[in-house]
Image (cartoon, rainbow, N blue to C red; front, top):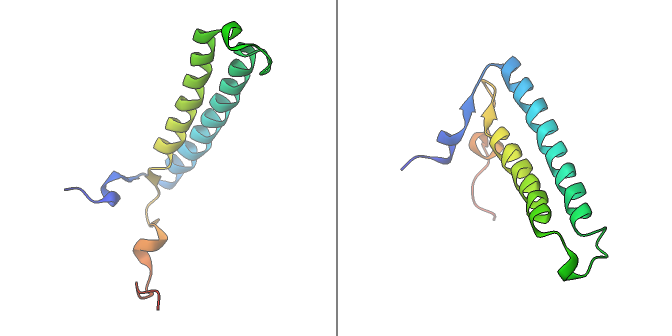
Length: 96
């Protein structure tokens, strides 16, 4: 069974910075676009349920989900030497 650390992708620092910047920009833009499309489909939330444009509303939800997926995938990348704080902790694991 693979560890959670096996999901991380170690890349050079320059590529890591590029991935972080562009994945964040794409994710944020996609979420904002999704809310704008969803707002248009529901006529700013004032439309009766029968007047909501279903396909456009689904498109907006798709944009939001795609933005979340891009952000989650972009968070998998690490630069050499980077690690999760819980993996490198010298503190004991007990809470007492």
